[in-house]
Image 1 (tube, rainbow, N blue to C red):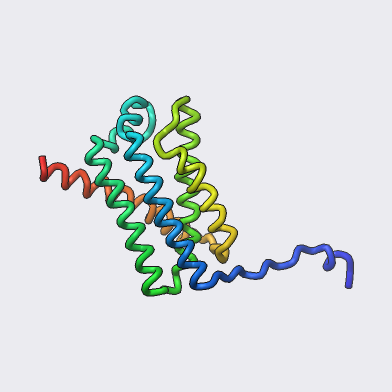
Image 2 (cartoon, rainbow, N blue to C red; image 1 turned 180 degrees about the horizontal axis):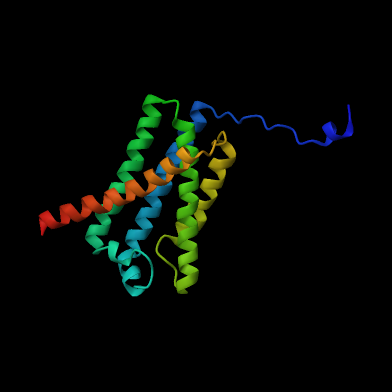
Length: 179
């Protein structure tokens, strides 16, 4: 065997995860999102945003009650996805979960960066750094790698933004109806 072939990196074997392992990871993601959203609400994200009007998205957060509805809707969407993955066992389950790992890590990083920029701990920074980042890293390592194509990137970003923006839109609509 020639030296170049011997020193060439071996192709990585695709990681397989058992159905039980996949189910546990989905439950972990749902629990992490619920915990993170609870932290944002309990520590007063809307008040924190109001104290930092120079941050992007300050106008989106509304009042605490409206934001609570947004958080409940986002949590419900993740729970619905989790229940679907657990009960139907679709072929896309592991890939969607792997994509969600990157969304979790981006969320955790954004809380950390905004906390550093504002010199003030942003609600969600604790669970973002202690739960979302490590869980995201665990998911990336445990699940089969995602083949990142323009379509996958667009779908992942679109789903993350769509769920959040949709929750804000529904909360705004419901708040306007209830006065």
